[in-house]
Image (tube, rainbow, N blue to C red; front, side, top):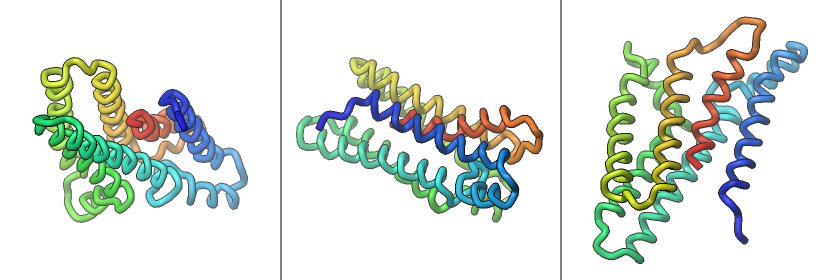
Length: 193
Protein backbone atom coordinates (compact mmCIF):
# COMPACT_ATOMS: atom_id res chain seq x y z
CA UNK A 1 0.00 0.00 0.00
CA UNK A 2 1.51 3.30 -1.09
CA UNK A 3 0.73 6.24 1.20
CA UNK A 4 1.86 9.62 -0.05
CA UNK A 5 3.63 11.89 2.41
CA UNK A 6 1.38 14.76 1.37
CA UNK A 7 -1.78 12.78 2.19
CA UNK A 8 -0.35 11.71 5.52
CA UNK A 9 0.60 15.29 6.34
CA UNK A 10 -2.87 16.55 5.38
CA UNK A 11 -4.51 13.87 7.55
CA UNK A 12 -2.32 14.83 10.52
CA UNK A 13 -3.16 18.50 9.95
CA UNK A 14 -6.85 17.57 9.89
CA UNK A 15 -6.40 15.93 13.30
CA UNK A 16 -4.62 19.06 14.59
CA UNK A 17 -7.57 21.22 13.55
CA UNK A 18 -10.01 18.80 15.19
CA UNK A 19 -8.03 19.02 18.45
CA UNK A 20 -7.87 22.80 18.14
CA UNK A 21 -11.62 22.90 17.52
CA UNK A 22 -12.28 20.77 20.59
CA UNK A 23 -10.06 23.06 22.66
CA UNK A 24 -11.80 26.18 21.39
CA UNK A 25 -15.21 24.54 21.68
CA UNK A 26 -14.98 24.58 25.44
CA UNK A 27 -15.37 28.39 25.33
CA UNK A 28 -18.69 28.25 23.50
CA UNK A 29 -20.61 25.54 25.37
CA UNK A 30 -22.24 25.49 28.81
CA UNK A 31 -19.83 25.29 31.73
CA UNK A 32 -20.78 21.77 32.90
CA UNK A 33 -20.03 20.40 29.42
CA UNK A 34 -17.05 22.71 28.99
CA UNK A 35 -15.27 21.13 31.97
CA UNK A 36 -15.48 17.69 30.35
CA UNK A 37 -14.06 19.00 27.10
CA UNK A 38 -11.37 20.99 28.91
CA UNK A 39 -10.34 17.96 30.91
CA UNK A 40 -9.75 15.87 27.80
CA UNK A 41 -8.92 18.37 25.04
CA UNK A 42 -7.29 21.42 26.63
CA UNK A 43 -4.02 22.33 24.99
CA UNK A 44 -2.96 24.01 28.22
CA UNK A 45 -3.05 20.75 30.22
CA UNK A 46 -1.07 17.54 30.36
CA UNK A 47 -2.11 13.87 30.13
CA UNK A 48 -4.99 14.34 27.70
CA UNK A 49 -5.77 13.71 24.02
CA UNK A 50 -3.53 16.46 22.51
CA UNK A 51 -0.62 15.38 24.71
CA UNK A 52 -1.02 11.77 23.64
CA UNK A 53 -1.29 12.85 19.99
CA UNK A 54 2.04 14.66 20.29
CA UNK A 55 3.56 11.71 22.17
CA UNK A 56 2.57 9.24 19.46
CA UNK A 57 3.87 11.48 16.67
CA UNK A 58 7.17 12.14 18.44
CA UNK A 59 7.60 8.42 19.06
CA UNK A 60 6.77 7.71 15.41
CA UNK A 61 9.56 10.07 14.32
CA UNK A 62 11.89 8.25 16.71
CA UNK A 63 10.83 4.86 15.39
CA UNK A 64 11.28 5.93 11.75
CA UNK A 65 14.74 7.30 12.56
CA UNK A 66 15.75 4.05 14.21
CA UNK A 67 14.45 2.09 11.21
CA UNK A 68 16.61 4.30 8.96
CA UNK A 69 19.56 3.62 11.28
CA UNK A 70 19.14 -0.16 10.98
CA UNK A 71 18.48 -0.01 7.22
CA UNK A 72 21.61 2.11 6.64
CA UNK A 73 23.52 -0.41 8.71
CA UNK A 74 22.51 -3.19 6.33
CA UNK A 75 22.63 -1.28 3.03
CA UNK A 76 25.32 1.41 3.20
CA UNK A 77 28.79 0.27 4.20
CA UNK A 78 31.33 2.63 5.74
CA UNK A 79 28.70 5.21 6.65
CA UNK A 80 29.34 5.27 10.39
CA UNK A 81 28.60 8.99 10.68
CA UNK A 82 25.27 8.65 8.87
CA UNK A 83 24.20 5.74 11.03
CA UNK A 84 25.29 7.56 14.19
CA UNK A 85 23.28 10.62 13.15
CA UNK A 86 20.07 8.62 12.72
CA UNK A 87 20.67 6.79 16.00
CA UNK A 88 21.08 10.09 17.88
CA UNK A 89 18.10 11.59 16.01
CA UNK A 90 15.94 8.65 17.05
CA UNK A 91 17.16 8.78 20.65
CA UNK A 92 16.41 12.52 20.92
CA UNK A 93 12.88 12.07 19.62
CA UNK A 94 12.35 9.05 21.86
CA UNK A 95 13.28 11.26 24.82
CA UNK A 96 10.94 14.03 23.61
CA UNK A 97 8.14 11.49 23.34
CA UNK A 98 8.81 10.15 26.84
CA UNK A 99 8.99 13.70 28.17
CA UNK A 100 5.67 14.59 26.58
CA UNK A 101 4.04 11.49 28.08
CA UNK A 102 5.67 11.50 31.51
CA UNK A 103 6.05 15.26 31.93
CA UNK A 104 9.71 15.34 32.94
CA UNK A 105 9.70 19.05 32.17
CA UNK A 106 6.95 19.54 34.76
CA UNK A 107 9.14 17.82 37.35
CA UNK A 108 11.92 20.31 36.59
CA UNK A 109 9.47 23.20 37.02
CA UNK A 110 8.14 21.80 40.30
CA UNK A 111 11.46 20.86 41.92
CA UNK A 112 13.74 23.70 40.87
CA UNK A 113 13.50 27.45 40.67
CA UNK A 114 14.55 27.29 37.03
CA UNK A 115 12.02 26.98 34.23
CA UNK A 116 12.46 23.77 32.25
CA UNK A 117 12.92 25.62 28.96
CA UNK A 118 16.28 26.95 30.21
CA UNK A 119 17.42 23.39 30.91
CA UNK A 120 16.30 22.02 27.54
CA UNK A 121 17.27 24.99 25.31
CA UNK A 122 21.05 24.36 25.23
CA UNK A 123 20.49 20.71 24.28
CA UNK A 124 17.99 21.78 21.62
CA UNK A 125 20.50 24.27 20.19
CA UNK A 126 23.26 21.64 20.09
CA UNK A 127 20.88 19.17 18.42
CA UNK A 128 19.89 21.76 15.79
CA UNK A 129 23.56 22.58 15.10
CA UNK A 130 24.38 18.89 14.69
CA UNK A 131 21.44 18.42 12.28
CA UNK A 132 22.45 21.53 10.33
CA UNK A 133 26.06 20.40 10.01
CA UNK A 134 24.99 16.91 8.99
CA UNK A 135 22.59 18.05 6.26
CA UNK A 136 24.50 21.07 4.94
CA UNK A 137 28.10 19.86 5.16
CA UNK A 138 28.05 16.05 5.21
CA UNK A 139 24.86 15.08 3.34
CA UNK A 140 24.54 18.18 1.16
CA UNK A 141 23.08 16.24 -1.78
CA UNK A 142 19.79 15.49 0.00
CA UNK A 143 18.17 18.92 -0.26
CA UNK A 144 14.55 17.80 0.01
CA UNK A 145 15.22 15.79 3.18
CA UNK A 146 17.40 18.60 4.58
CA UNK A 147 14.71 21.22 4.02
CA UNK A 148 12.02 18.98 5.51
CA UNK A 149 13.95 18.13 8.66
CA UNK A 150 15.58 21.51 9.30
CA UNK A 151 12.30 23.29 8.48
CA UNK A 152 10.49 21.00 10.91
CA UNK A 153 13.06 21.66 13.62
CA UNK A 154 12.66 25.41 13.14
CA UNK A 155 8.86 25.15 13.36
CA UNK A 156 9.25 22.92 16.43
CA UNK A 157 11.59 25.44 18.09
CA UNK A 158 9.29 28.37 17.32
CA UNK A 159 6.27 26.49 18.65
CA UNK A 160 8.20 25.34 21.69
CA UNK A 161 9.50 28.80 22.57
CA UNK A 162 6.18 30.51 21.82
CA UNK A 163 4.11 28.21 24.00
CA UNK A 164 6.56 28.16 26.90
CA UNK A 165 7.21 31.90 27.05
CA UNK A 166 3.62 33.04 26.56
CA UNK A 167 1.14 33.02 29.46
CA UNK A 168 -0.39 29.61 30.25
CA UNK A 169 -3.91 30.94 30.06
CA UNK A 170 -5.28 33.94 28.26
CA UNK A 171 -8.49 34.88 30.04
CA UNK A 172 -9.85 37.19 27.44
CA UNK A 173 -13.11 36.81 25.57
CA UNK A 174 -11.13 36.91 22.36
CA UNK A 175 -10.20 33.34 21.49
CA UNK A 176 -7.93 34.18 18.53
CA UNK A 177 -4.69 34.67 20.55
CA UNK A 178 -5.32 31.40 22.38
CA UNK A 179 -6.18 29.59 19.17
CA UNK A 180 -3.01 30.83 17.52
CA UNK A 181 -0.89 29.74 20.49
CA UNK A 182 -2.57 26.32 20.61
CA UNK A 183 -2.15 25.80 16.89
CA UNK A 184 1.54 26.65 17.22
CA UNK A 185 1.79 24.04 19.98
CA UNK A 186 0.40 21.22 17.83
CA UNK A 187 1.84 22.13 14.42
CA UNK A 188 5.50 21.38 15.18
CA UNK A 189 4.80 17.78 16.05
CA UNK A 190 2.79 17.27 12.89
CA UNK A 191 5.39 19.06 10.78
CA UNK A 192 8.08 16.68 11.99
CA UNK A 193 6.22 13.86 10.28
